[in-house]
Structures are given as structure tokens and as C-alpha cells.
Picture (cartoon, rainbow, N blue to C red):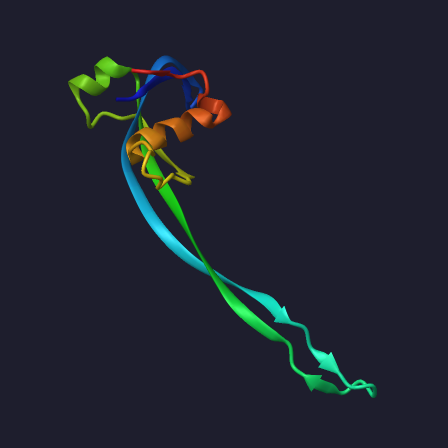
Amino acid sequence: MGLKGAYNFKGIDLSEAYLQVSSINCSYESSSSQNLKTAAVYNSDGSLKTEAVYETIWTKSPSSHASVKVFKDKATRDANPGSQLTEFGFSFTESLAATAKNHVKQAYEALKADDKYKDYTDV
């Protein structure tokens, strides 16, 4: 599985470059925010009668980082999988829904969603 398209490597145009997702790191991170539950109440003289009450809201969100190897073309990758010209990474948010595609397919879809790679074709 990979993507084929035009790629510029250090000023050299590769018309049939082959991009292969080589690794994916997934995480499920928790973050908190403080939401006002009850506003502070003040006395008529401006002194504090009752402090504000806040509640902590926790949210969880998935995130992934993928590494992509760039080869001159698919034949070069097939002949020597260690012969990539360069490698780059990108982050994306994967779906954890029961109907979601696997992480590798989601990584390729996220890569193709980037304007730089939108015209690449699946190989």
C-alpha cells in the first residue's frame, strides 16, 4: 500500500514518487478544563460572600503521528525497501469508532487530505 505522485526532492522533480507510511504512533490523551458551576456571590459592600464553584471537565481525544518514507518510484522501493530518499512525519486525528478504518488506511487518507498530496493515487 502506498501513494504515487509528483514529489520535489531538493529541486529534483520525481514524477512517480512512491510514498509509504512506515510507522504510526497513536495516543489517547486526556485533558481537563475548569468550568464555572456557580458564580461567586458578593455582599453589598463588595466583600466576598460565597466563592465561585468550578468543576473539572475531562475530555479524551485520540491523536496520531505517522512517518512517511519517500522513494523515487515503487520499483525502487520494491527492489530495496531501505532506499528511501527522505522521510517526513505528520500528525492527524484518527477515528476510534467501531466502523472506522484501520490506522494505516486512516493515515493514507489524512495524507491525501493535505493539498500537497491530494492528487496522489493509491498504489
